[in-house]
Length: 194
Image 1 (cartoon, one colour):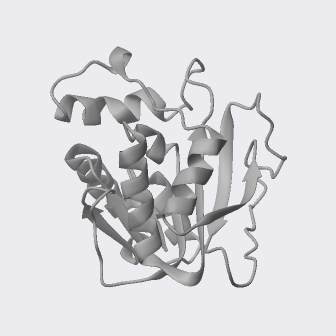
Image 2 (image 1 turned 135 degrees about the horizontal axis):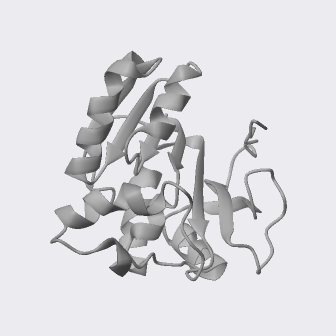
């Protein structure tokens, strides 16, 4: 499994604790270091490989049946071109019948999820001392998402308004998208209910 935008490794380590082998890619050297520091206390940490690389340009010699970009990781892409470059990375690393799952904030005026500001503060300092107050997440509309997916050879197969599989509505604060290649068997994403 490939995790793009793994931040401090919380999602990657949680997936590894459930028995998955994970390659976690994080562009921020500070967030990458934070994940590496957490490693000794995490169950399943031996199943996680951490890589500090740009999501837009990382190229690996592996393909994955599942690629995820959790916690609005793609919302940090500044432009549609950056978003497209990141999705090109996804397409190059996804198996033909693979699944790409990601979430994006849909409302720029709402506060980020609890991990939001503290997690991004180190990354912002790394990028030139910007304050957390100046953090502007890019909101991509479903039409923009669908356009970028199409240009990169992918299609949204499912779109939800939360992690409980509730159908997406234009008033939702987030969109959870399950994508894949436009041909082949339809994947099913099983979302565990906590």
